[in-house]
Length: 360
Ligand code: ADP
Image: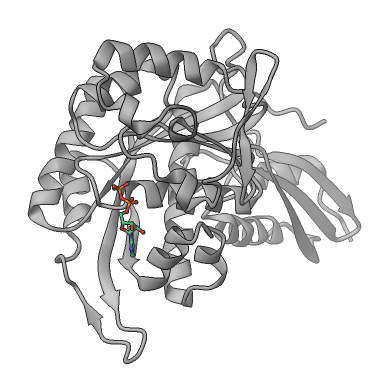
């Protein structure tokens, strides 16, 4: 019986598109190896993020495409992940592949909570993640990450980040008292943040999540400008009309800075009573998705209002968002994390020239 050749398998893999990147796996250089042993074909696929939302779909599509070849009895897959990013050797943050700016049109919508969810969730997926709390007037990351008492150590010229929940983090709040920051104006913020960012020993980082101050005023704008490069902004909002208007302004502010929007997250989207399961849409629901569509930016998902999330934030236990909440809450958060990672991959693929196939 004739058996398939590697070339035939690769040809079949050219028919499998990454559902988000809209190109085939071979063109995207995601096929790392093909091993054929009799009728058994083993394909090694390298995903563009360990938090890939579409792994199952890619797996099924590869099974179908390769399984159609004559002489194939079994198709097995192996996945690895390598976050792709442009080389930043010449840049001010050499080891950092992507910077995600987390912003909001106004305070209190859960921006810092979302920054913590994204950082912790991406780290849990296996990525190397850092978190910079740049919300200089209300730094809440140390509390939410459970490191309020930590004192960053200086190593020579550089500050060593603190590690919590698998995330390297630094808060301006741990270095500069917020009372001091209150008097700062734009140019001073710019200087301090530029210096601060470059004086942290970030090391090799796939995703640096930056929690920016809320609003569209001078300070968030200058702060965003002080970051050497931003892959994209993630805007957090709640569903009421008044909050959405602010979120729209935030999206436009980042666009004016030439920072594309990775998407919008609707927080406090609905409430499910843990006792009776009744669902209440306290602040209305779905507005962020509509606003995202109108603005032409992706909608990254909805996170419910949930007492445990608040309690774990206050207790500085971010991993418990993923381990000790109801399944529906956990799934909502995981789906937002995956959608965000997916959009980073999309942005990265748009920016980078695709490498060529290296399989022999
Ligand atoms: P912001 O950074 O936008 O000012 P925070 O992230 O600090 O907002 O959140 C404000 C408060 O709301 C915090 O006490 C936080 O724990 C709580 N919170 C945020 N999102 C949720 C949620 N989905 N469910 C319950 N509480 C939340």
